[in-house]
Amino acid sequence: MSVAQSISLLALLILVSAFFSVAEITLAASRRLRLRQMADEGDPRAIQVIQVQEQPGHYFTVVQIGVNALAILGGIVGEGFFSPIFSAWLEYLLEPAPAATLGFIVSFVLTTSIFIVITDLVPKQIGMAAPERLAVRVIRPMLMLSRLLKPLVLVYAWLANGLIRLSGLPQKRDDSITPDDILAMAQAGAQSGSLAASEQQVIENIFELDTRTLPSAMTQRDAIAYFLRDDIEALVRTRIADDPYSFYPVCDGDIDHIIGYVRLKDLFQRVLSGTPISFEDPSLIRKLLVVPDRLSLAEMLAQFRQAGETFALIVNEYSLVVGLITLNDVMSIVMGDLVSPWYEEQIVQRDENSWLIDGITPIQDVRRALNIDSMLHEDEYETLAGFLMTMLRRVPRRTDRVSWGGYTFEVMDVDSYRIDQVMATREGTRKSD
Image (cartoon, rainbow, N blue to C red):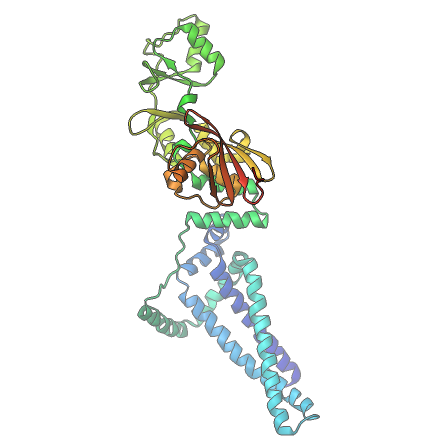
């Protein structure tokens, strides 16, 4: 074989082997969601890739046949081409026998290195960079080879499947996507710059709805504006002027005896029409959605959708009202900084190493603001005040301190057993008293 023929054959073997490497890595690395998107955009080859991913045995058998056969053939051709050249050069320095042996070793190392770099490392790096785009380009040639080599493929596949079954290993990959997978992809997208940090936060907040309960987002009991059944019209007008809301609960005697709610729009209509406002009129009172405080925010969204309401009163196991939640409260948790800074009122950063935090601030918001990975016994409380009570095992008093996650939390103000303000200071920066 002439020099030109040897070089041409070796180059062809390298290119075909690189093709098989690309075919192997792109099938394994292609993401099902991206392939389905490509299929929806009109690329039928993406469907073929998905189908092969479901039963990849024959595909990988063809790849291995090609890779191994070409590697062996490439070694033969490379050794036959390079060995005489290196042996002839080395004969100027060594005897013919050792020169031939060393020439063979050098040609073997060179041929192996060429195949490792050009047919394995480079194609696989390229394939990992754009797996779906390359997978759809190689799928049809690979399917054609699968049909041509089908008898041989069936023999090898039968042997391989038999060994897999005997070993008890899985034969199909699990393509199920968990919330952790989605969060990891969102984080990777934010790190690469393809996803804005605010968009990543929205995705994380959506999955957080399943773990956050209503008290973490509700308006506290003492902040609820409501009417009593026997309130006179002048008092109703004054309360609306002081606390203008779209809806008001209506109670009998106190807030724990709920009879329904009234819409501000209905009250305005009565004022405009000159009709007296009286909560004794049953046509003015609407049925109120009441939910238990153990619901998650995701379950609350389902309740809103089912009932067709946008707000609800929250009661505890003793049927006492503990708070009120609106659809906007839930969506504010989802949208986070895109709506308004969640820390604007409840978490105020004083300087680089200290924060002033309201005691009723949801513990998830505290973790996010201070970049704390986890809190001790986090499933036992909803707020920063609950965390302090859990850690101290009593009602906190002013100047009480708790250390966790690299921060010292000091109670600054307590009002009738309610923790109003807490100072969070990064440990190691606190000045001595």
